[in-house]
Amino acid sequence: MGSSKYIPPVNLSPEQNLSRYLQEIRKFPMLSFEVEQNLACRWIYGEDQEAAEKLVNSHLRLVAKIAMGFRGYGLPLAELISEGNIGMMQAVAKFDPEKGFRLSTYAMWWIRASIQEYILRSWSLVKMGTTAAQKKLFFNLRRLKGQMDAYEDGDLKPEHVEAISKRLDVTKDEVISMNRRMAGGDASLNSPVRMDGEGEWQDWLQDDSLNQEEMISDFQELIRRRSLLKGAMTGLTDRERIILTERRLKSRPATLENLSQSFGISRERVRQIEERAFGKVQKSVKNTLIELNIAS
Image (cartoon, rainbow, N blue to C red; front, side, top):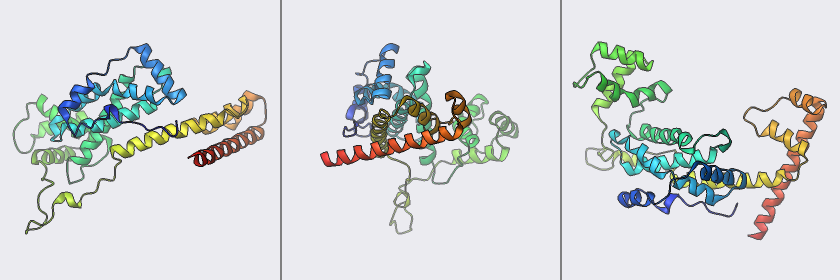
């Protein structure tokens, strides 16, 4: 697995030919629950790249549908889809089939989050704030104004400001400021910086976020690390494997006290077994990497 290369969905980029891309993704079949579970298990427990690709590709239509819901922010649909595809890959990488949910239910959050973060990064040259409440305000202000028939130009009426403030749990000043920012529109990134026309705003911008190629590279690295760890863990005893997993591989590590009670040994003995198992894994990974470098 370490030497395999992850191929982006459809091996197409929506920026290159959006209409063709939308036609191509319709060719991927929808998956039944049983097939989806099987593919997810093959990917998570066997690092099966083909299974991961099938999971991603089968949900590209979902990405496109969600991306189309964000067209009102003035960004190219192809770019929104590309960002959504990154979110889809993240969802597949973190999906746990044992919880019984469909991948689409889990992936929707990752797709929306990826697209929304991209919109917030791209929408304005002026930083708009990144708190959860401010993001919620940005993505809900238009909808709430529509519900209140507050379509007039200029500032919102005081009663509208107060209602939106309460609904979204933000200050009145934040509502007024966001409304002015969104009503004013963005300056073009192609606008000249100097009076003589030399240089454009976009020449001064730097996007520090990961691009699609970097995301795919990270995905490959995740595959490689999982494969190395899985191979190294086979060299441990059952007790060593359980203790190392509980102490080093869980989001909430088990305490030495709990493990000592489970195995009927002292906390110090648990710590010693953990350190020994970790040393074995490190040595195994190091030796595997040396063998791979020699083979290449």
